[in-house]
Amino acid sequence: MSDEVTRFLVEEMGFSVLAMEASASAGPAVDAYVRQGVGDAAGVLAGLGFWTWRTREVLGMIEWMRAYNRGRLEDQKVRFVGVDPQKCGGSLAVLGSFLRQVAPDREAGLLAPLRVLAEAHPGAHPDPRRRLVRDAEELLGFLRGHGPDAADALRHARILVRAADLVTGTRQHTNPERTVFAARDRYMAEAVGELLTDPSTKIALWAHNGHITKGRYGGAVPAMGQHLHARFGDAYYALGLLFGSGSFRVRRMWPGPWSRPGAGALGTHRIGPAHPGTVEARLATANPGDHVVDLRGAATAPTAVREWLGGRHHTRSFGAVVPRWTYRFHLSPVSPAEEYDGLAYVAVSTASRPLPAS
Image (cartoon, rainbow, N blue to C red):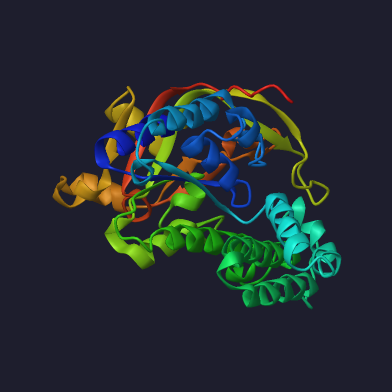
């Protein structure tokens, strides 16, 4: 569904960027492939660092972008951008190459403390003193004195500052806005905003519904979409993706504090129709086939419809990870008209198809 919507936005609506909840460090390699044909599609896709994207479906999207760009003028080509500061090994490689050219004597001292950021998960090294953040900021300050030739290096250094903040932050706090989850969504929103310095830019943004929503997710974390809606108003259109029955790929985690990011068995799981009363069940009752509902037209809908769209309901919430055994009953509260501008419903979902390991 995301693929079809994006192709429509590019071909019919003049959209020029596909931004994804994926490594900001590795994004330039994908962009070089789709715009200039550098490298190969499967290789640059693997570099994004998220198993959720390493699928035949996303590979097809990347290859379509390359085919669309072939033969077009540079300013007519569609770009690819990653907006997540996680998985920043690519930035470390770029900065290492730059420092070896301009200050080889400083490379080891500036980068050695930061190499832990390459694969570390948010909250992996909680540190109230924020030593990694200070190390990243020292590198950023050093690069600022190297003029316009350091522009690309500066961009990667800023990614490291954000990554260091996530890695040293806390996953739990009495104020949800001070957790690494809130910081991650804020940084992703900032990355999207940086792309919009040119007012003609139009972005198709791929992320989990929890990040796309104009409200909060996980109970109280301000979502990326909330930041974007506050900054850009109705120019931001939040499209939630829901499904009825079918299958999906996911990691199943053991419950309790012994679970850790990246662990858990990865497999395909099947599920029947949504529970009565959920948003998915109501959509299926109204229209059992695939469809899209534009919620911005709710103001002119019948009273009963407006009241339902503005009320609190539940929707299934499957991400990259679900709890074992109980995931079938995993529901999240949502107010459809307040949190989304539109809902796309797929009656029968099929699991993504993983690419073979290289």
